[in-house]
Image (tube, rainbow, N blue to C red; front, side, top):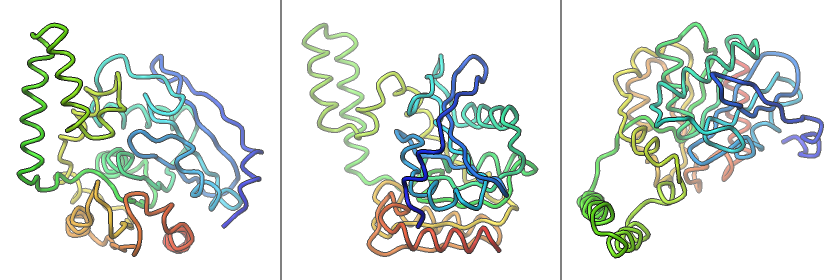
Length: 262
């Protein structure tokens, strides 16, 4: 693993895409590598991966719209909107056919890019990626039903209704939802999107890396992706959760480097 002090020589910059200022960071020369973080993350979320590759690759990391220090979309977005935005940013940065390492929500964007815009993507590493709708247990469905009732009272119940809604949300809503703020409608929209129909269209070499204890995007999602993406390989890291690339940083670096070098 490379030493993180070298990161200080890599400044942050901004690129304008359709009126939105997006923060990005780049360093190095060689084959381009694009890093896409997960929901609620930022460039900083991918620091260990950036550090792993920055001395022998041209590494680019981007704050997705509404994340980190990039500006928020003016309206609720779908994954397609994020994908188109990233593609336009790549054009402006003259980033041609990069390999991609994408975590969680960033995986949604990468899946769309690799399936619908094949000529834009080199090799693909999906890490604890979203994109498969996991089976929902009864407990989850009950939480959703309670939240819908609370939303109704919040809309029509005045101050008391809003207080009740906020209290219920604090008990049943996910951490991502509670932290999403103005991005909540976007979050709700993207987490409902099932991208499995796109996966058989991915022809680029693909490595799937998962944490065995991932509770946000379970290993079963990785198994589904491995079946649908032709020629893909799934590796499950022991003693790792949803941020497997951090929990097992050394092993992740070795696996990703070996795959991208081959």
